[in-house]
Image (tube, rainbow over all chains, first blue to last red; front, top):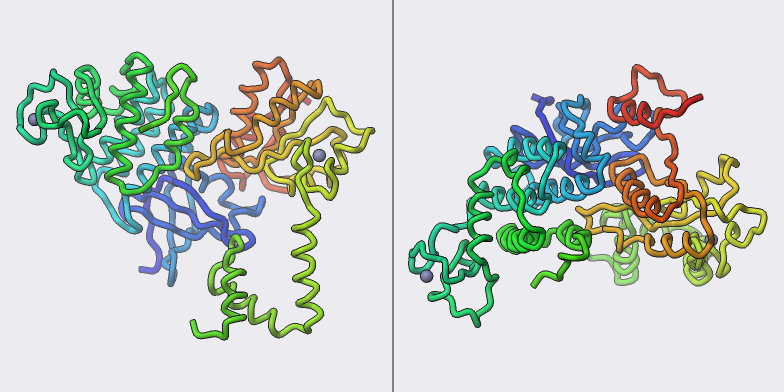
Length: 257
Length: 198
Ligand SMILES: [Zn+2]
Ligand SMILES: [Zn+2]
């Protein structure tokens, strides 16, 4: 078959030649894809804003020799609210970047499309703590690619008593207790409340996460912990992390370790 | 590749330009070595001269041969009105309409977190200090009608509204000559929101 149809969420695009764009998107059936949209930069283009970031569209592809060609696009959900609120845009971009960097080209991971789609929809609604919302998404995506953080007991001795202070052990993929990890050896310290809330993020749906609240400084600490964890397992720097840290309210802004 | 070193070097230099891949670089390099020597020298000279003589206007960051660009040094223009654009080339498009008599401010791009571009990477602080110093009354946000351009306009509008300065946005929307029935939903939605009383 020369043509096929799939749903996609647009992640980003790059200029190609005079008037074309290469569109990077997460598709429902074909994983992370790049496709060419011809003439999309002309104001008379039939695509218009349909291939801009955040748009959830039904797309008709034509198989090309190199990249597939996008021949039609119909909007399913434009996620308009993410364009009308700067903070929603900022955190929405982070959701897109994390998703993109969790996959190789043409790689398909079950439930990732659904996770992104639902999360973008939740982000359009009221979100109590954007920091918790993004943290939850990042840790859940790490889980989907096989690196769900182990937070229930110490990854070394297996004890579930973590009240005496614990650390996030990146290589070990979870928390390590104060006895197994001498505090001098670094690692990100996690107190009991952070641990409890982070566990809750993993167990809750994104809709439930959107209604969770916590003091700003703790939300920031969980955000830093999630950033460290996701960058370690995605093995790539996440550009939007820097921008988000620069936009935190001044009272809780601090440079990550 | 097995080209003679001068061609190798030319290809490598061309391939560093934005939007030029190795194949295009090779094509351009072979074109250049076939043209008359004078033509190649003119090209080389134009590159060096532009790079040497052109600087950023210290007030608006437009490209200029002087410390102040032609608009900033024109006393007939209204300095209380500032039009914010992403790139210097956008100024040319606005000047072409002949409708605008204020000054400009070139941001140097749009906020795009996925590319690591936040407000700190753009000339936003420079805009804020300019608004304070030059008694600016209205800022027209003429960033692109893309997701990134819209977000940048939102960010700056929030910032300067708190300074008591009026922020306006170009009424973006349907391309002139376009048929309503062929307009896509996103553009049409935006046009409806940007509607003004007539
Ligand atoms: Zn232990
Ligand atoms: Zn100037």
